[in-house]
Image (cartoon, rainbow, N blue to C red):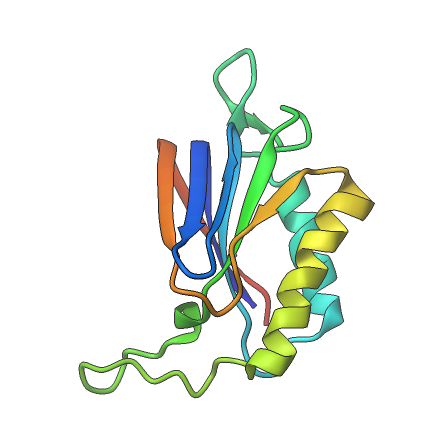
Amino acid sequence: MIAIVQRVSSASVSVKTPSYFAEISCGLCVLLGIEKGDEQAHATWMARKLANLRIFQDADGKMNRSVKDIDGEIMLISQFTLAGDCNAGNRPSFIAAADPSVAEPLVHSVGEALVKNHGVPVSKGVFGAMMQVTIVNEGPVTLVLKRD
């Protein structure tokens, strides 16, 4: 499981068909890739890590506060291309990406755990859809989380 995590002042996702729109204000935009072999334990770990990751500034300007500490939100967007391997040739290979029947429930599980176990509001993209994502990255702060 791999996530690209961005500290944002706002983020939104829209889909033309079927019509869909979601947005958050201050918080995290998380692009989440599910890989073959990922399971519920990975989703639980990822939710805990995202909820407690201290990348927001405290009163001294240090990255010492989590999305929970600032009463922030998370925009969670499934992105299978994160499992792409670009080492051989110029076209990515997606053989490491989990099958959608496995990936979709795990993405849902991460979002559900963030809300139920950590009290973090979550907005989501649409699994498998062509989405337009708008991100206002603060900092910029961008991190990669990977759970093997």
